[in-house]
Amino acid sequence: MDIIFEKTKKTGIIKLNRPEALNALNYDMAKKFSYQLNEWEKNDSIEQILLLGEGKHFCAGGDVKSLSLGGKNTNLKRDFFFSEYKLNYQINNFSKPYLSLWNGVVMGGGIGLSLYGNFRIVTDTTKFAMPETAIGFFPDVGGSYFLSKIKNNYGIFLALTGNVIGPLEILNLGLGTHYCPSKETDNFIDMYIESGILKEFNASSLKKENELIDKISISKLFDGEIKTIFKKLKEHDSNNAEILLNILEKKCPMSLAVTLELLKKGKSKNLKECLEMEYKLSQNMVNRDDFDEGIDAVLVSKHHNPNWNPSSINDIEQNHVNKLFEFNSKTLKL
Ligand code: QUE
Image (cartoon, rainbow, N blue to C red; front, side, top):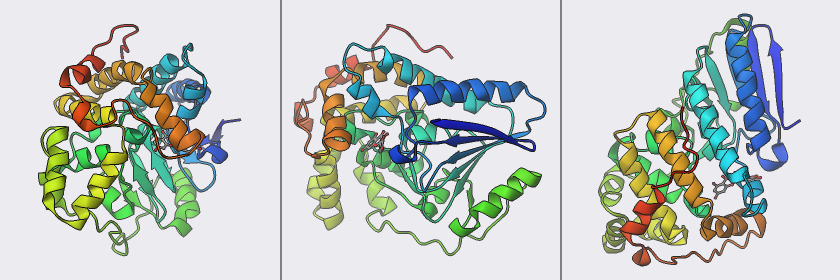
């Protein structure tokens, strides 16, 4: 079973159970998740939800490998994203307390399963990222909603670079809601199930582990058009700017351009509007060769040397970017 549902006292427990794939969410899991959540919404003997990942990690994202390996002539690329974003919005509208335990890797699709609930528990091992520009895709599951609303262009930075952040930054950005030391998570969960109470821990021991980031330069450097951002990084003449430039130069150029446009559009939209926009965009992006190329490079052959097309940010035209936002086959209506 890829996903396990059980009821303990008044808590509905959902466990993502593909530890060998870092609990990546596939179509089947998304459908079952949605069905069960709907059942528990109506069931008065369920008072709260607990979402867990089996093993050391919470969830690495959507199971994009299966989408790419499914080939071109499949409805899976359509149906998967349709169900995934519908589920994200269902969680947003869910009426009972909903808590996720963010152990280890928390990326992409995993964020969409937890961010719109009430509580995200950060532990010592939590690693948070929206890494989709590495695979020819874009930060979805409401990335255009929550990343565009983070101050000082920090969300733009996270979206473009796929930079991993740890417990302290996750809490400071308000992405996580509570801290629980790793060795205390079993007790924390027992108490939540027993009483619905969230045990409080002092997070003052947490250290900032990402010295690359200083907010002032991020807010200045990650401002403007994508070509402008590259130019600013080139001209900045600092070690950190050079590291960031090297990171961005490995990402899919079209993904970078699309992501920046997406966050710009998302800034004034609500979650529903953002997910609907992302669904249209997803259907254009998954049918570009860069998507298969990126997934092969990162997750299948793992050669980490994708051949992007266009291969450089200089070859991206804004009208091609704009076209990727225009699509009308099966619109996501929430
Ligand atoms: C970008 C991504 C994903 C990624 C790596 C990226 C992603 C995803 C996974 C992933 C990781 C391990 C697995 C798995 C999937 O990695 O979305 O099945 O075992 O799901 O750079 O967007």
